Length: 221
Image (cartoon, rainbow, N blue to C red; front, top):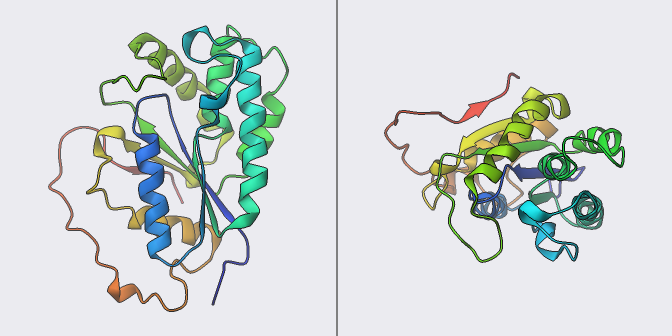
């Protein structure tokens, strides 16, 4: 079997400074090693002409949500898998914060409908310190505000079976993305490996010793 019968879409979400970009690239590489074509959607907020971080207005965050959807519409048809650094769900959290908790432009119905278009949503949990990249905020309070909104809203936007939580501290070169890739394939009822990519030649990393704290968590099937 060649390409998948339909395109899949995976969003890596959460607040800023929690290794979403590293995770998205790692997962994209795993899908490519399985012989699947991949498109990558970068974080659109970095192109925002209206301002970002704590000082962003509701207008600025509306621009981000609309631009996110536009990017996904453009890239999704081009590959088996579209891997996204953010989705509408976490961008909606930034929007609500910028609007003081009020849905000023009545975008929630659109966000709810669009959230259903993701086949898998991977939320990274903020158990790492913020570090400066010259663009995003290093305010812990700001990050905690966004996480609180996500805690309140996310379960109503996506289904448990399409939701995975991973502590940000787990993300690195040694993280094993194959269980997540296998989960995506199972959710869309397609084979993970493309023709000519025998599964037996994919070597999975030896599991690490368990450590205290939150563990990778899948929603109910």
